[in-house]
Image 1 (cartoon, rainbow, N blue to C red):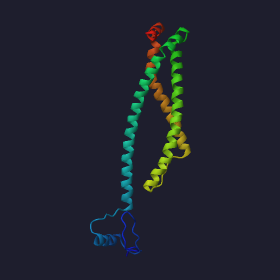
Image 2: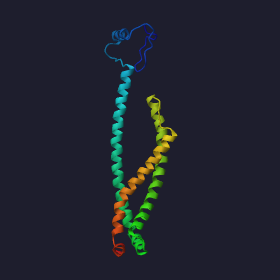
Image 3: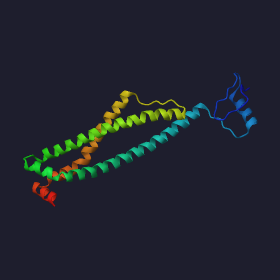
Image 4: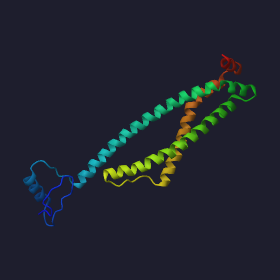
Length: 192
């Protein structure tokens, strides 16, 4: 019945044509006992899909947590950055710039920094993730179906846009707060 009488765990059995699966399972039970299990390809696919869905859910929760942490960290950094620029804001207001002009100039400066950081982060992340994905495929002995170059570029652009939006959201309140302060109060606070 078996081409190879040695049964190696974790490997496929090579079976001659004309035998039923139930006969093979019975003979295996007779030879080995209850110390083995039969996994059918469809069941294997279902189990793998379920495990991958669980991993996907865990990653989604981790990504959401990181986004919240990013928003809080950016808010704190932007608050500190804008407070340090109180003198510049006051001088811009004394020079005749409106609150909106000052707001837009500071926001533009912060967004330039965010775009620069997001682009560098995307390139570094891509240089790490793509080879690591291939490594995972080799370790699991499964093909790695990573994104193509077009999809990677699309994700990079989407990431830059999201980072800029997060920057605008996290920086708006501190900038608005400092722009509404009277210029002489801002200068006096800087002098203290």
